[in-house]
Length: 79
Image (cartoon, rainbow, N blue to C red; front, top):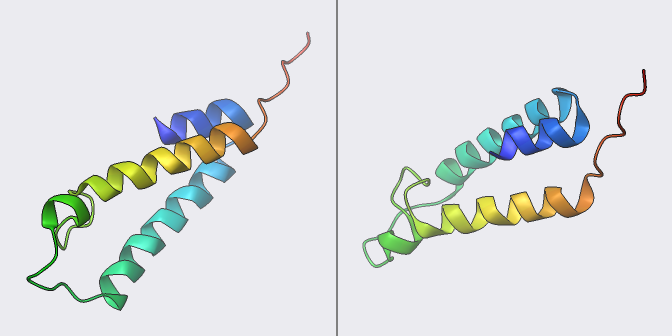
């Protein structure tokens, strides 16, 4: 849904490709820069997969809201 919203708003794939690359870089960096401990709440923060906790849902919703508010809709094409 996120990438469809980006494509619908911009009409180009460049923004979506850059967004995907930044999300992958963030996930890989998160795995390298953090250590999991036994005391954390895996139901909220997720496990070592990152995408299985509630925090992933919150982050994705924040990204959708940010794109919805900052990326203007593309202008209609006139014939």
